[in-house]
Image (cartoon, rainbow, N blue to C red; front, side, top):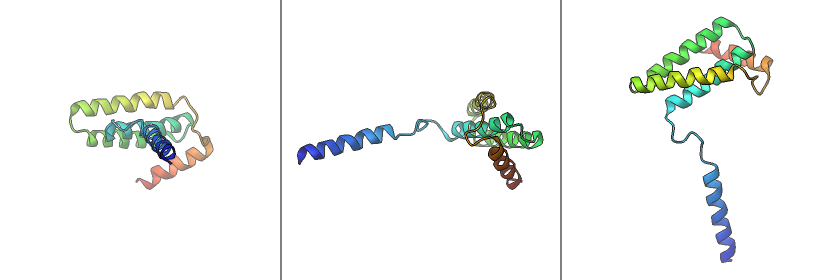
Length: 112
């Protein structure tokens, strides 16, 4: 009985350690910058409408500036966005370009 309890506790502890978010110690601005850049990069890779990409990037950069508590966070957020954007624009989105572009353009239209 005690062996089963110990095993269950050990399993729960290991699961808790492994399930922790990789970005748990990062602030919201970096997570937002990364996620937005992945979306914009996917749109660039799939050659979505340039005006919509520019609109999305402008809104994302404005949101990063708004979320920043100071100039340091603003610069850090913009750097994260630009770096991830460069990498994401070289890789096809997981769900394929046709579905991605359709979702991206609808999202940009809904945000207007």
